[in-house]
Amino acid sequence: MKTKWVQPMPLQTPPHTSEYTMHVDEKDGKEILVCTVGKTVLHYDLRCLQDLHAMLKAHGDWMELGSADEQKPAKEGTVEAWGRSESNPMGGWYGLKKGYRGRFGMYIPPLMEALGLAEVTHEAKGNKMRAI
Image (cartoon, rainbow, N blue to C red; front, top):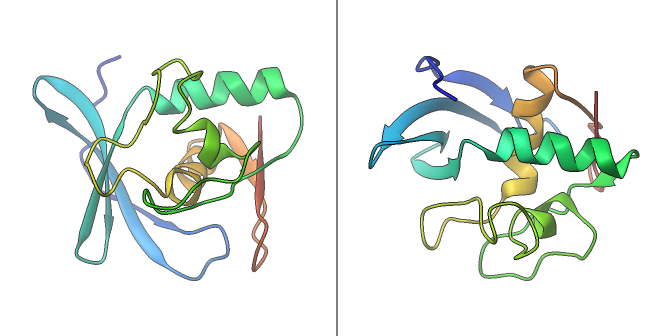
């Protein structure tokens, strides 16, 4: 899937408490998502969008986001847990930068919402998403 989307897209975390950007870039000949939060830069495998959308479609209902840093365990049954699970299509982490592989459940859902692939709730805590 070749994507020409290099302009950073401004986004907000699900509770609308922080701003960040996402864009597509290439690293080692592979397209990746680049997430910039202040001075922190995270990388995610681009296929996470397609894979997460398919999983949510199969799930058929709302799923809790459950965002967590890489060093912390993810709550079972959440988007975050799925984004690092050996049973997902990637066979593990969609996050690509060691030490910064977590927060999948914080930064990917708003992008999917902006792309028209999912609905995301915007509460102070306990946000969820579902496929469109």
